[in-house]
Length: 301
Image (cartoon, rainbow, N blue to C red; front, side, top):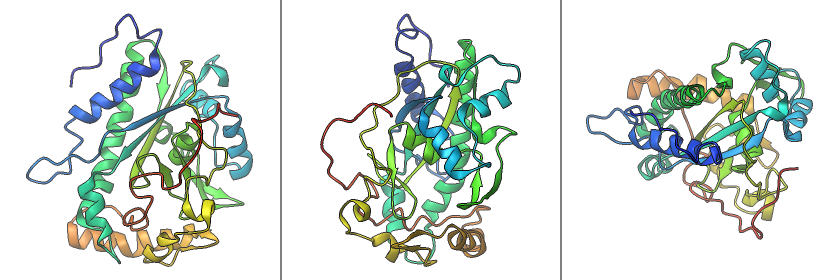
């Protein structure tokens, strides 16, 4: 595709042209495809948010999760050794790629294994997300703005957190949370304005962009169970029994996804990837924030 061209407003409003670049890529990239004989897109219109590299929440996440987690400045310095960039010079650019209506409708009918569309979206959506990361870092580099994708960095790894078990150096969902794009549900999925059935991604760039307002103060604010004590449908939807009122059992979920669902996806759909997503479809938070909130938001803490 033709790159987004810089105009006189780009310097004054980088958030606008970056968001436009993400939207244009989603609209025109051949990678946004389910790989059926006829073209079918992987994602609906994206959501985009921004957070400061020195947002205190990133430090709190590192303190809470422990050694596996890396802050934006740590990841950026690993990618650009010798840089003089401080955390305050950096912006995390985060996006949400909502699943399409067809994908959600098909998976909502399943009770044990992921549907074919969900499995395809899981597999090809990952490829598309990486293409978007590379595209965005590329157009930023054209403007002299160093940028990197945390999950593509050699510094990214999976390790053990003393408090949470399996953890990684960077969490796309937590970056989206800090960037004002959503809060967590009972199943640990991120509930956005366009729902929980989505994929998210991010890059870190040496550019200062005003942070997106966070319209919440509680990291569970948009979950019906935590907000009102109701719903709990994700508990019923989970074929692994990995969700309870106490939360999400990551190990049990992982065992099902990699030990059961992955084999099913390979045999039934000939896709070498795992999938499930039953807790993300056929639930009130599938396509929206189901909790009515007051106010227009607040500035990041």
